[in-house]
Image 1 (cartoon, one colour):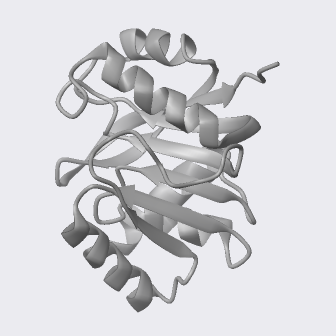
Image 2 (image 1 turned 180 degrees about the horizontal axis):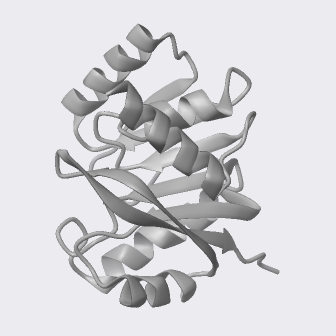
Length: 178
């Protein structure tokens, strides 16, 4: 377990997560990536862990407390794309195993999520995406159509559906708006 968290933190750091940043983990679940992100951003950073499942958020909060991480803010949502954060308030957003046809089956639903993420990200901020259950090229086109540009891809060990697998995190930058 410690090895998995270490691998996740390393991958997040390679993808651009830095000390002192504020990070949104949309669809965080029990914190597979919120916890490593909180460790990566350190005590001067913050992770906003958003999920529609209150029990998962409770489990995440307990894990954070046990790990001595007090820089995670658990935020309950009702399954829609709205996030209770100010516009241009976070440095990076994680959409890991969440932006796909099982959770958001229609392209319009995914577009609303991407528009909300775009709203809360500061200019020139990062969107990190772990594409699952969808063709990565199609999803990349959807993301780029909502004001982001793909800049990199980082492969590593990822947690997905209760197992460890090799996957790629796509790194997008928010295109500044006028």
